[in-house]
Image 1 (cartoon, rainbow, N blue to C red):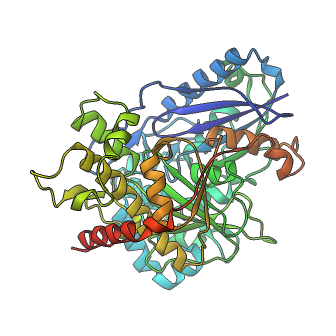
Image 2: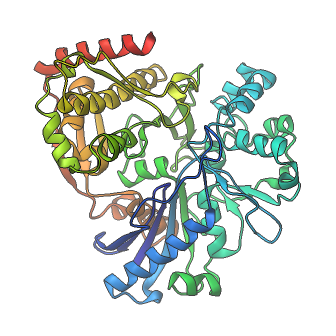
Length: 492
């Protein structure tokens, strides 16, 4: 018996086939092998074709079944993780009306800011726990004003994971957690935020039907099953945004547990049992996957858009792709803590929420041509990413999320000893790395949603710590000094 998880990112779609009894991954695959393109027709825009997600999901699904030699009927449930905050709009025939406006698109910032002022800061924060900001609701408002012909044809709007599920089942469904990530959930009333729909002039019929995160959310149609290489009638029993799902994949479900990722963008995600908010909306609060009205669980999310993308930019452009990431880490180790005064602001991938939706770009400061070389550039970049994390973590602490242990998958920037040592030494937190990823988490979620797993203990069979990084408190002063210099540059 097997479970299938999909993780729809902006770079690729990954699939993971998990054996129920052992919790072991029997096969995984991602497509495309090179990154999916992100179109930017204007500065600050970021769009993708939702059909590309579907085609890559089909390729990944067929590949993992072939690798594992598993029959379609042996897959008992499907889970979906997806890039958060995106907007997909479809007509009554479920045809996509325009490219998806994805998470790192910043065009909707003014729409969210105007809504924040018009609705009222106090009401927005008390009911939404956030400013409408640059999230899904504001993106739909942009379409309404700038593409009225498209808006007039919209039957439903949805998130990227909702779209993938719709292609699978023919049903348009979303979750309370999904609406909360679009800033369309009223936390006080535990229902869609009617007052924000009214402000933007959105008819409530545009909102998809709601089902719980862990539940039967539809079954594969025969045509979809053929394209995926699966059996018709297989249920979709879990869906969640990539960061709540990443936390779930790491078994981060209780208050003061912390999950982190550092791929193209970087995220620290902490769980709380209190509906708190940052008055400046520098971090954001959503419904966590384990939330119920009886046992509330909220996910406080810090997102830094410019993290791994900076590291890859250095490799692909400054170094012309001539060295590996491991070689870059080795080079960086030859520069001292603080990179001998070279400071990097790692932004430059869209408006940064932690900077109150400013987009300062990426930059290096204090370059001395007689002292600094490649090791300093690479170290300054990786330290700058960690410093941006820590800047946001300090905001998270202000809204009641404690930080003792950070859990992460052993992937992306967490493969860099310099990155993870800097993070541990600066924060003073132990870092635990696990043998998991978003697609694996989605598969485990599917098992819980289908009732195949009866509890969390069963669902996380096979999840193991692969590496533990302890902070070196003797080095903390040097890292704190470097951070204070970085913060001073940021404030200038």
